[in-house]
Image (cartoon, rainbow, N blue to C red; front, side, top):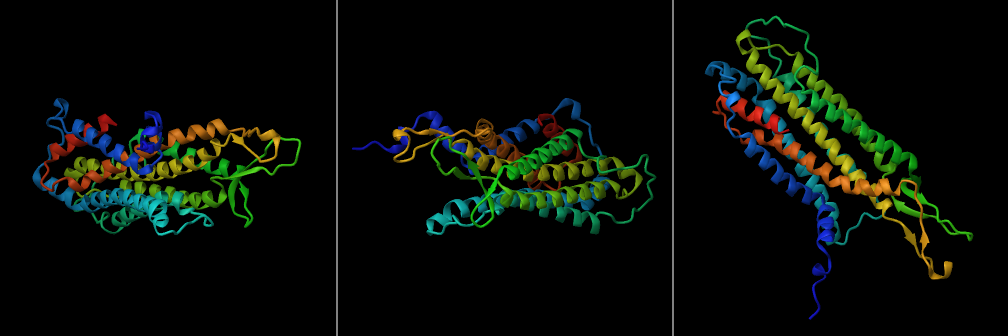
Length: 354
């Protein structure tokens, strides 16, 4: 009886095959996020007594900020769902029904995470503008000028900025290295084959301008909308003087969720680009019938090793993105009756883990 082909692979090959699937990264992220929430839910001595607000104050703050917190949670879930649906439809269902996209440039594969994050943050921005900027019940004189950085953790902003720059640099560099196909679409990487006789160069699918331009457009709009949401969230007036402390915590949650969703969308796009770029790094030899005595040619590409390394980094980027989205999505499972002190402990615990 022939042995199953599954057992012909070693452990490393099976692990590599599993991590080549983006949805496997989602499974790992669920486990990681669950562990982080368990650790963060443990009571901390230094947090006891933190955030002790009266029930009227807590109710006023919850009423004002609940729509934005829920919208952020739904946006986090929506980014994951849209990413998973696109991956399943393109990678499995189309093949199941003998429909293929060989001649199509599936640019939406890389733009979808950025675009879905953009839509989610746009909804939050709309809620802040229409419902979250109501006139205060009692005027509050601001102690200092509030900007888009006022409630955003510095490390979150730094992480988002680094992700933005890396995705931008990767997209531009890959676009410059790409070449057009017969229809003028920049989707190929041309690798010359060194030989005395004339041999056509190798053309492999690559993250060229045909994929990168939609990502750059979505990235520009996402950056603008994220900045607008952070700025509007910080600049709006407080309800009344006694709610300032509680509102600062609520606005901090809005800012953290906004930055996490934007960062996750960019990370997923960067992971997808890294996987496509890595496919070009896997080309090392070429065999041409009737040439070179049957021996393979060594195909040299200047950045082949760097491209191959990008494929190993991609799962880590996806796991990080999914963890960020899942942490934002946990806002949906919090009860309305949660005490302010318990919210402060959970929030502080998660931030300590991160």
